[in-house]
Length: 335
Ligand code: CA
Image (tube, rainbow, N blue to C red; front, side, top):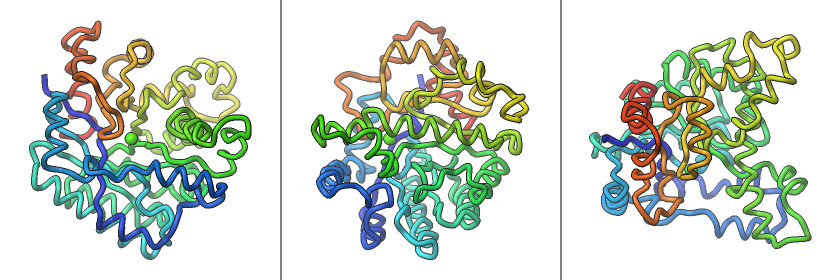
């Protein structure tokens, strides 16, 4: 069965060098020195991330993956001022486009956008889709403490809806004040607090909250064709949908539909490499196989065995497996 995975990361030294002089993003700057030092050690810029010929194909073959949709992991330009962000993102997308052009049968790509300048970001999305045949954009965290329900970012989402390409939401370090308030504590090690604030819990909640804020802002009423992708089995939100519907009703929210309707109609979900049978079955039960797309979060998650077998061994019909393995991605991304 053909396998397409859509949260598969990439880095390039030229892009890392181009952004290095601008310093740490706002989510890091206000943290204690020892926490920042620990985070810097966690940033993964290894060979697997940069390689697009050898290590990556070894992984894809071992995992029976035919096609990866590539994306930069970190927010490329979060710390870069608007004037330079546009230029650097453009260069970063051109570098990624060259990789795809070299292996058009194995790769597609999501654009990285200069969120600092939303009008230019919308133009860059259009350029990437029309000139490079990118299949959407991946955005990370907040931009300097601003959530994307701020009307200043509307042009980006308006353009995505117009082009009919999805926006994929990726976690990033939560704002420093959130990390300090909720996750870091004198009563357990700094490294534990760091994991709690990020990949162990916090940044998933952060993305789930962010997508919910987008729903509550009415963006899907304004742009019914807007499509999002949420990784990590929906970033904690699916379990809260019934409660949100119970408490935040359309009479109060002013939205045209129930909150869960938007999560069923405008959003697609991936495992991001979390191969938990319980979560998988819950997601299929809540959203159906037609909402789930395969993703392995290369190269961040090591797999001891073939992760594609996890999908093939699921208690689903062959038709449902085909949807998750490739048909949903092909339809959503126009592949
Ligand atoms: Ca990831």
